Length: 254
Ligand SMILES: C[S@@+](CC[C@H](N)C(=O)[O-])C[C@H]1O[C@@H](n2cnc3c(N)ncnc32)[C@H](O)[C@@H]1O
Image 1 (cartoon, protein in one colour):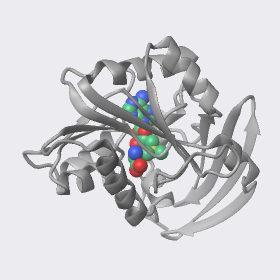
Image 2 (cartoon, rainbow, N blue to C red):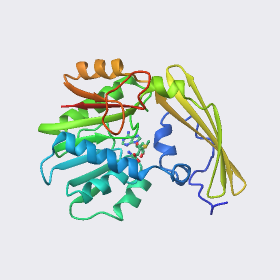
Image 3 (cartoon, rainbow, N blue to C red):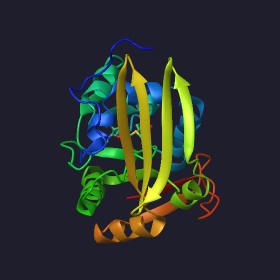
């Protein structure tokens, strides 16, 4: 059982339109996912920065950075990194590790940045959350507009077909003394994850809802935004993308 972490007057946030603004800002999100694979994330950043052949001191934007696990590592490689996220709590936590070449800010990915970057990364399925499809396009356009002329962007999304084939419908995870009951299902072209748990005698219910965007959907969005898709990879080793077997859909564009 954890100390009382309830930041909300009500506990059922499953029906709020912007579920992503509330769930990702709670301490419970970070508790549930505290076993994230940092080594894999670092290898991915090694592979991606080598592939992009970024200049020394390149300016990188980690868009939807969470608590900054990729930003911090990229900065340790020598890059000037800005981590940006909607979650004030995540940015407050990440900012504790800020330095003159590692910056963090609260920022909505739909907005074009004031500054330009040599590379913009949107990592670990930080896309497809919005109710309105126009917001997806807005995000792609904002990324494009925030790149400098020679800049590259990367969206690292789930491979929907692989995820659906391997969906675990029910799971129970105990983390920090909290028992999370998780249900996953596909509905209305979205992948849902319902998360129920009790903490300090209070019941909580959250829903993650990510649009089932496939390569063709991204290609269409990029075409609409006048963006050139350069390369597609299927995993963090940057191997070829296979529709049915690849774990990830990693797109490089400029
Ligand atoms: C799945 S997490 C990934 C976080 C991080 N990239 C990582 O790999 O650990 C998705 C992140 O997107 C952020 N997010 C959701 N909607 C956003 C928005 N409109 N603008 C910026 N960030 C947003 C959330 O706050 C959350 O930190």
